[in-house]
Image (cartoon, rainbow, N blue to C red):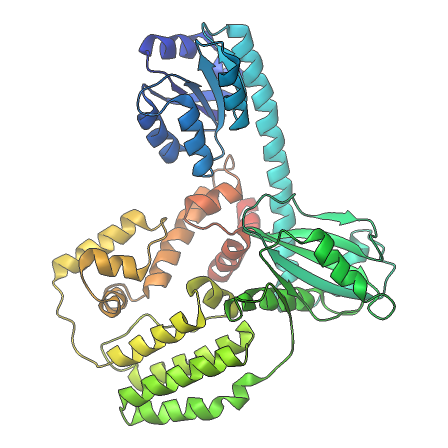
Length: 484
């Protein structure tokens, strides 16, 4: 059943609309009603109905403003607007803002029924497409896992795809908005290139490119300039051949794309094999000596030096991540027995890319961690601890950072982190992830919800990221879990 909200400032109009339609026969169920635009918006944000039937003239927010708010919050509710005004400008504005239909009062039963039947067909088609996309993404998630060894020729032949050129690359693109076409389609050769397109994340698309690097190397640049001009940043893998594992090329393009983190001034980055970690190990060893000798100022200076070196070398994010994990190792090695157990943990490049906005912020966090690792007992009342946990439990589906909790409860970030670990046995991120994934596990039993809807309900945006952590936590992808 698709859900419906009816909004009109005249209760008798709401009653009449509710009574004139055989909702269940048409495949709908009315889940609420509102008598002004503001209360309608509150219900929409909370219940996310599939359909909103709204009067244009309402106090608080009128129908057009309500429609604008639905679009602003990126909700999927389809809107049918109703008005006693027949002026053409209202209909124009309603359709311009994405209304599904525009009806005049008094509402005609046949016209409303017709609009609902057309809308139902549209919603069912979207559901069908979404389920197909989820199956595709689930398959791709398995194939693109780093430890997978499926060769390019096996991947292509299993899908009946013939490629006439000898070389392959993956290109990962991050867009400002998700306004690109759905992925998963093969395209004909364009100027010596054939490509396969995949949606691989939130606002993210990857292209498997087939071309001839030796005879026509410029075709790759032509493809990027002609077809990827809207991408905010682009990551390009190394060159592969038919026997190259497809996961290897995908991971290379993804590392290059995420390396926008270390080189924000660059829009296009190509994956290059490098080993900066061994070159900078001397600085890491100096940091270890300073930590061991309890010289916090020297630790700070060395971390600043390392931060500058990473920036100057334009390191790829996988190399930066390796350095970061070496420093985390020092924290656990020398401070694991203290009571000050702060929010610092091993990460892969994807986690690092999501959690920090710059190299400076990353090293700033490390400096705070080492400065606060004093082993002092925490003197926070049990009542405050209880309130913090209760607040997290009530809001874990929202994007709440440690700094937000710090400001709300007037406690340093380090103390909030330490309290979480001490009270729950988990870091803040682990605690929130555990809450979100267990909720997702419950919601997956409701087959009327698409996996993408569940991803959004539990607080994530990126399907691929959710897939990764769900599989890591439960040992199976959400799509396969749903089939159990």
